[in-house]
Length: 392
Image (cartoon, rainbow, N blue to C red; front, side):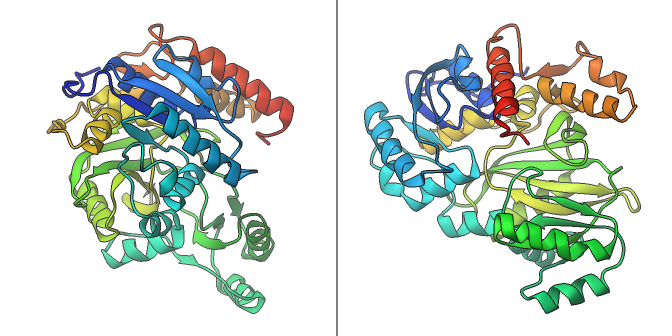
């Protein structure tokens, strides 16, 4: 792992990191902890997985924002007033949305590098993001929405080839339907609208193409401070989901267009723009914007772009020293996701031996001997989700 930016002036400060029951919190906790930042986590889980990290000073319990957002906001303000963190890290879409909707719950006590509510809503809306991407010349898949039953029937009747029906606002693979026949579009569309409130139909890009990501940290003047690119090698679920094995790469043209997209949105903070390589043309096709920290963040840190620490320094108004370049060809494994990827293929009679190569050179893992206890937390969390049915 390459050296992080200078930690001067951040050691001894405090960071408040939400959603420490999610794996993306771990590289943030570890990066800040190594720099001497006191990290306090927030979760509705009594013993969240990333709270087991040796770099997590404490975890504050809050109500579940999914079922009682008002109680969450009230408790969150109490936590902020008590902890008095220097910098706030809201990680999940709903947490970010609540923080932007209720700035009085945290702004009197700390700072953060976040877009405004309108920009966040625009970036999170896949339909809106597609329109902006199209305006700046990014290749996009054929995409359509239907506001009425008649419009939905006309859409399905005129559609050619396989499609993907997905929510306009969601993360990961939640609510995504893959349909092979246009006849199946109306039922999938209605089911998605019933569960998520809005939906869209999109041309299906062949699954063989690699997923690509461009990650960017934008300052308050909507200028890029740090950029990073990665390619997905494996993902879970195998039909399309978060990366469980990925490699650092760089496409200067794709970086430039990704930055242009975020500038057009007047974006502030961190975002990861997702693309899908079309094997028929070799062209990267724009898919969506994730306007928050992303799941494969640990790869960027391992390759030399320490987004959590850069975010911390930038939020505090300190000088930042992002690397002019980062190491290419560095690989990163989400251990549990890779195991699940292996089992999913095994279920279909396929053996992916590459998933079992745990000690490859220049490959980093989310779980290390230097900080092993989050593995126990992840196993504990997986059993909880399995027993409660939450993961279904």
